[in-house]
Length: 309
Image (cartoon, rainbow, N blue to C red; front, side, top):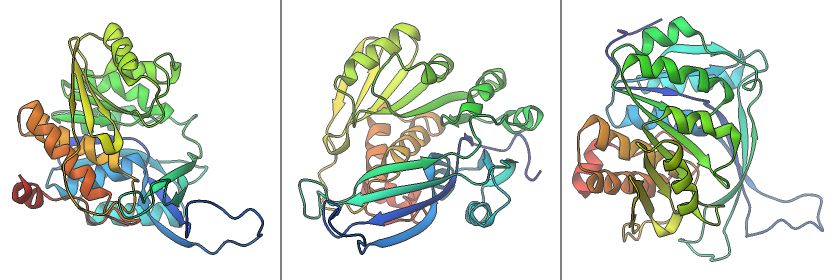
């Protein structure tokens, strides 16, 4: 393993892999034809990939705990993360191979530049439901780190008590939540200090937030609301934050929620900024991500946030 075990600002725990974005020429598939002509792009993505690269490109000392296969996709992920300076001492083998996603990209009902970038995701997590992260390696990596950013492969729930013992702030990104009763996510809700979730497919995100606060009253909850911005819930208080008024094109929404979390947590946990300031920086990071087409190589930088702030 590389790096000093007490030198990290953040340890990202989750899945990274290779995404294939399939860009449709319009807003739907022509099912009357066998062949549809598309633009297909491969890149390093998924929640762990976006988060690890996002922190590193913000200048944070970053380590990654996650599974990769002994395959060409895993080689690509390792090379890209290593190129960003991410410590890979926590990478362990998935015999089933590196996780893959296919993201079907289309213009959306609004059309035009701001209506572009909508997606349907088809995720192949390979062996993550049956994997276990190496406990001693995790203990060494997490010792002394300030922030542990946890995504939700099944094996990651076993890292939560290790992070708690290490005394780090624990943030869990629950991704797309449709019900507060989903048992898969409850360990992450119970084990976190801060949770993020997307309301893209939620009928009542406030009800979900209230239920989570009943389970874990000390939670800080950040809810991604897409083009409507985001919301923050804490101790029974709820506040909404409009999206920044920017004319940047929206070409790809993959990674927007991950970037919101990275920008917010860097500001709030690592820099000690107030919540409103952290929300603003998180939203700028998310909007910048949406201008990047099939890429995690040019996520927002500290210099860009300083210039825009």
